[in-house]
Image (cartoon, rainbow, N blue to C red; front, side, top):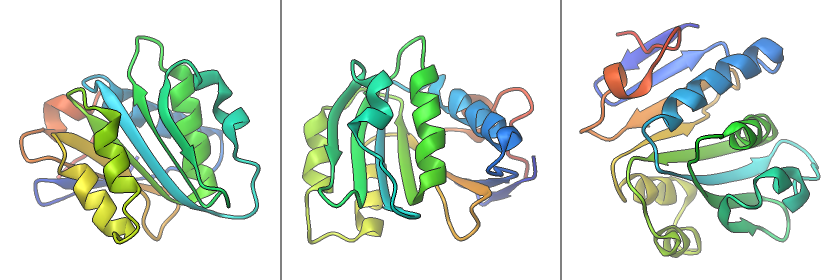
Length: 177
């Protein structure tokens, strides 16, 4: 995987192709992010095309997802997920949403947060997507993953007090300077 570090708080990892190898890479990254996380908040928007992304698509997480919100027009999906020992269902849902939405945003928090904090931000119609992302990022120490122009690159921003070196990457998933 080709990775780059931008300053102290942002890195990118290329090689997240839409094939099986890309899914394996993405699952390794997500599993590394989950190691020190207690809760994940997802805010994904803009499906690539008409998809049937409904509650059924993430039914395997139904007992672990809190606060599931689907826009009436399937334009956006948001939910919070409490990290458990077995996170395979979440990792699979992450990969599916990463592939099917133009703007997948995931926030991996190292502390527990009440779902109401997320709702207040997500439901504020005055905020742009970027403003919502910033407010969600500023709630507590976290890693934020997002997609930019290139579909095969995952971008990761981190809170100042977190570290890419020890907190995030494991095995062959690294962000090099």
